[in-house]
Length: 453
Image (cartoon, rainbow, N blue to C red; front, side):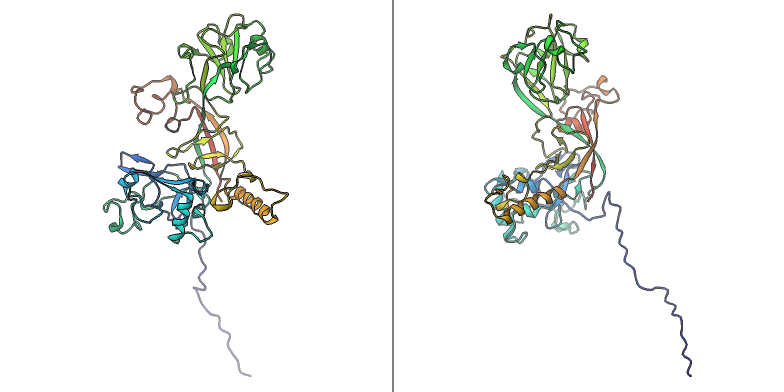
């Protein structure tokens, strides 16, 4: 019998096992570049470059893999004849690439493109398929901008011959953040020229919050919220406002009236402090303005059923801007958030009647007709809403902080006459932070957890 040796093989290398972990998820190691076709938003004087996406804004990608504001998906998902994208003379001066042509924007002025024009151009450039629309060129959100993105330098970021300015590349790449806790100012909407007290005379009935009325001290005492604070006959009356909660009076959010009576009055901290006719108190959460009036049974001098009052409130949503990140609407701790057309945060409230994915590149505009519509069409709309609920719920509020903090509103530095962008935050802004001042916020900051995928 022949002996056959069974040798052990000493292979100390073996098969190469792939490394699968690339980075921590909070700041993924993804080589992102801002899209070169993004309209410029704000000029940074320090570095003399335009910003195309402000820090904190929600970020998506275009189908070339470039970073863009997520709100463009909503801006592009409109009726065919509606404006979806606008370029201005600032884009001409700064060399922005025109999305419809792929070359520098060539008009020293303003040009608007409709959804149909964008769709046609993107199909012609081979950037979307023949059955896709402008909205399909933008992905769902992937994260947020941890800092402001400047206008892309040009080309691939390496070859200076392709740069807009061949010797200047401010950001070679940009990062995104995910699964982080952010601070975002909460911006109220203005309620303009509301008739004082709903335009009716003073009544002795309990307050119906959110319905404009003049209420006597008798009516205030019948209101559970104030029954332990006010008795019938006390020298106080209430002007109930139509919107609530009301934004705290501040640099961005004054309260004024058509007769300018409030301008010479002083706000006090409680109803009990109303001891003279030049004082007022506001229950901001309930939307009620309290005024001194001897006997508590008449509308105070300087106010009337014909005058108006202007204030800021959270019940309706502010317009918002693309320049500074903000949270818009009446939100509370625990609420989930999505994004709007300006890539700002708003309360997430999925609605099958207005979800993404309607015909001709626009969003749906009504509930499906369950009686006469085809089953496939009904299913498609329901599935679109389900998908949106999965992909567009991007954050959750875990706290709301009210300012001013650290007593900064009690300290005053010079130059309060300067513009908001030039003031010293805190001591020259009534205690507001720079984010609150620049966004148009009052005194609230939402602490939100950006939810990673």
